[in-house]
Length: 155
Image (cartoon, rainbow, N blue to C red; front, side, top):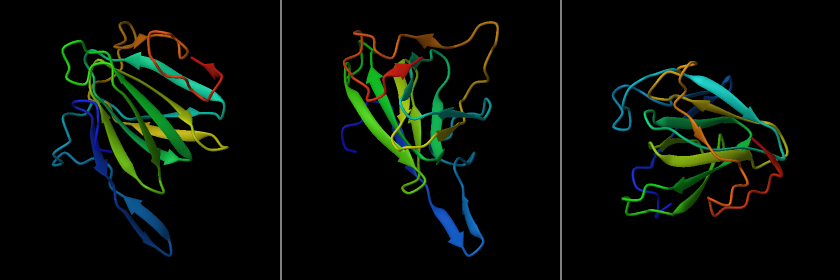
């Protein structure tokens, strides 16, 4: 993808396969894309649903799809950014494995782009703080963001 939102990075991943299955390194502390480790978690989305929109002020997300296929949509709401108001659609799956790094203050959401539940592994740079989450949300169908999802249910 040529026209990425400023500060968005994609790392192509390599699966090493044999008759037993495969191994795939996702993020190493000696990668150019590595910043810091906060935690790791998985999140699943069912067909017809959207998880979004939200952004973070402190953390940077590192998304890898580990099951199914997801469409991740990014919206640059940073007024000083050279890509202000740009929208990116990025597809993640194990068929073409990638790590998607989402910068601070960039709205993002995702939906399954296949007929099955899809799972994302996220390795954010900050841990989740339950009493004061670094998560700022708008509804998935908000008019604030110029994008229409295929999914009809969200949160």
